[in-house]
Structures are given as structure tokens and as C-alpha cells.
Amino acid sequence: MRINYKLKRLFIRQTLSLNEEIKIEGAQASYLVHVLRMKEGAEILLFNGQDGEWLAKLIIVKKKFVVVKLIHQERLQTTHSNLIYCFAPLKHARLDYMVQKAVEMGASILQPVITHHTQVTRINMARMEANVIEASEQCGILSLPECVSALSLAELLARWDETQSLFFCDEEHKSPNPLPSFKKRNVTTPGVLIGPEGGFSEEERSFLKKHPFVVPMSLGPRILRADTAAVAALALLNATVGDWSMD
Amino acid sequence: MRINYKLKRLFIRQTLSLNEEIKIEGAQASYLVHVLRMKEGAEILLFNGQDGEWLAKLIIVKKKFVVVKLIHQERLQTTHSNLIYCFAPLKHARLDYMVQKAVEMGASILQPVITHHTQVTRINMARMEANVIEASEQCGILSLPECVSALSLAELLARWDETQSLFFCDEEHKSPNPLPSFKKRNVTTPGVLIGPEGGFSEEERSFLKKHPFVVPMSLGPRILRADTAAVAALALLNATVGDWSMD
Image 1: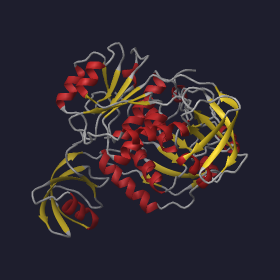
Image 2 (image 1 turned 120 degrees about the horizontal axis):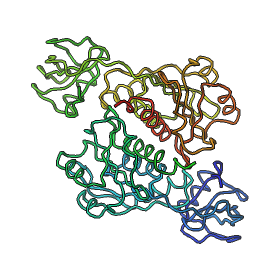
Image 3 (image 1 turned 120 degrees about the vertical axis):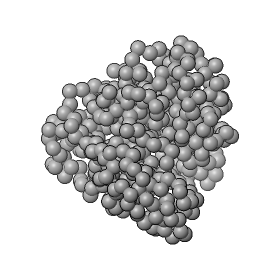
Image 4 (image 1 turned 90 degrees about the vertical axis):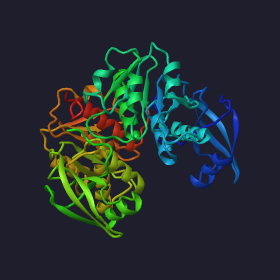
């Protein structure tokens, strides 16, 4: 079923079923009432990551809360994509942005990785999850990507499922063309690894290349910021072996 | 020749040649002296869009200006890419971001296009050019992309070189896979057209499709923000027919 572009979508941590009445409070209620100025009778979409997407009608609108009634199921629950997005965390707003983009681009697991040149070591997981929810509401997915705890690069590689390819964006890779990297790879649960601003160290690059499941790829002749590289790499992965490639 | 990742690069509107001494004033001097705290003897890279890239040594450092001497040419001048980036302008910070990303992704012409759902009609060209310069300094290119005046969608299509493909990101396109759109196209000077938040109107979509040079393409099953779509579309274009595809 198609995504409805017109209605506001909200993620909610409650069971969703026909005719159920649900009280929405806090920031979500405030957003509906004070920002969007919604009245009784207005419609929104709700999803909880499990019960698909539901059309809901506002039946009570107060200053501090709203009650909605579930009218019908718009879309059935879909399963997660299987795309592990491994990234050296950036600072503050740029991390927010990077997380939002990864969600839009179909990541199912967001895996922070601490590398030699990573500038951030403590990650605000609550903020990361809030960004995941907001991006999920906006981009139309029904399963929330999972934010997992940071690993060192060595831990990531030690725990990696060796049957699955991990594509890593290597600024020093000889061929500028990334597309051949995606050919004949095992990619039921592929990963993309994006380094920090400043790239991987020499030591890290040779350590990465010792692992047969690691596939180096280039992203052209220009220096890309880490968040640009993330979107570019995920676009290529999606278009070659991911969920954009299925006709 | 490779990009030197370590040195600060500055764009400067002066002729560059061996042993020349150049006075740097204003914001650029302030940045070198007060932000980077550079001293006499420090090295930077200079480019002007015409004379390649030069290694320069700071020989005088004052509070309000710096004098550098050109030591040798690091890279020869390269020619522009031929990629026309047509985009419905976004507001403020998101336009800055979109412009920066387009430069990193190799656009040679930045063409704002006013569509039905475009929220911005007046564009601050000086701000757009400042963003182009900053992104060019950062991403290592030697030719500055050109910012041109906004056109309506009808004007853009009327003036388009009909021998060149214009790829347009069509949310309603049936196949989710964008890669086939790039096959067997005339792409010596291709264009990418990114619509506004809210997409193109029905009328615009059918108007676009009447033009044989317009190639609709999808960017998968999720709703992408306009700036995400821009990077994704440019990544695919670069990897298939642009400057990432050359081995």
C-alpha cells in the first residue's frame, strides 16, 4: 500500500486496533494542538512498529491532551530492512542530521563505531532515539530502526557475521567507481561503514582490509563530509542490492 | 595529482604564480590568525579557479592581515565537471546545506527552479556563493561551481539543451529502482532536478513528462527530504555516468 503524503504521522508506544481510543499527551499533544492547531475531527496516522499504520480521528482536543479514535488500518505492518549502518559519531547537530539521513535511507540498525579519529566518545542515546523516531514519522517507514551501543572498530569486526559484506568508504581506494564493489556480494544483511571527519588511520585501513568480508569502495575524486558520504554510500547500496533495486 | 587532506585551502580572487606575494585581509585573514592561530612559516593552499592549486607560506602575520608567498604549484588547473543541478530552493539553513552538498557531489552549475510548491522565491545569491566557496575549499575542487539566477520550471524546460538528459526525482514513479534510468542516455552535460518539500504538482509532473529529454526516476520506497534526495540522486548519477564512473 502507498504512503499517504498528506497526513501527519506519529509514532506511539501503545497497541493499535480498530475503534480503540487513545489518549495522546505531552510533546506530541502539544505539537498537534499548539503547532498544527488541529481541531476535533482532524485526521492523523499512527504507527507503533508492530501493528501497521492506522488512520485516527481526533475526538477530544484539550490544551494538554488529545484523544483519538482508530478508524481503520491504512497499511499492514512491514518487516525491517536488513541494513546495518556503522558510523563514527559526529558532534551534536551533525550527528542528529546523520541519524535522520540514515533512517530515511533505510538503515535498520544504527551502530556507532569509535575509531582513532572519532571526536565523540559519549553518545546521547536518548537524543539519537528521538531523532530516529522523528525521521521515521517523516519518511513513512513502519518499523523503527534500532540504536545500539557504541563499539570500537576492533569489536565491530570481531562480532561481525562473516558471511555478510561490510562496505567501507575508503578515501584511498584506487578506482573512483563504487558500483563494482557491490557485485557478487553476500548482502542479505549488509553493512556500510562510514569513518569520521579525517578518515580512518593507516593502521585502521590495513586492519579493515585483513578481513575478507570487508569491501573497500571509493566515493569519487572529491573529499566528502561524513554525512554526505553516508547518504551517497547508502544510495548506491540501496540501488544495487537494497530495497530500491527490487522491481 | 592527489588532494592534500592536511592543509587548509583558501579560494582567493587573485592571479597565482610562482614566488608571488599575496596580502590576505578581512574574514580570511581573521580566520587564519584568530581561529586557526597560524604563525609565520605556516603553510596553506590557495586556488582561484584558474591557476591550479598553490602551496603558500605565511611570511607576515599581523592582527588584520597576512602576507603569503607562493612556494610551488601543487596541482594543475582542472576543468569543470558538466553537471547541472536544478533544485527548488529551501529555506535558510537547509538551502545552505543543499548548496554545500551539491558542490561536494560535483555540480558545476547551481540552477534554482521555482515550482508550484516552492516555499522560497527570493534567493540570497551572495549567501549561496559564499556557501559554494566554503564547500569548494573543503572538498578539494579547483573550479568554482556557478550560481545562476532562478528560473520557473517552464523557463528551465524551454531553455534546456534538448540533446541532454534531465533526470527528475519523481516520487510517483512506478519502479523503485533508479539505475535503469541512467542507461543509454546522452549525458555529456546532464542535469538533475530536485523538487521542493511536498514534491511536484500533478500538472508539473505531466508537463515534465511531455519533454523527451526528461527522464523520471525513483529514489526508493521511503519519503526523502529534498536535501537527502539531492545527494542520493547525484551519487547515482556520478556512479553511473559522472566522474565516479571513470576507472
